[in-house]
Length: 67
Image (tube, rainbow, N blue to C red; front, side):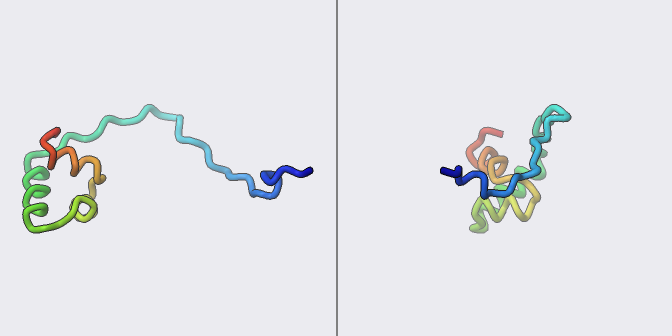
């Protein structure tokens, strides 16, 4: 009986372990205000993140008052 994994191609992905992870950049007051303004205008978190070049988690933290 052959293992079905034998038919799958090997991936050349190697996790990036060369450097330690960086801490998140601090969110400036200007960025916080932009996030809040965009939210008030009806944008959803993923849109705000895309517009400002952030990740959605960072936007969520600002909107929930954690940052």
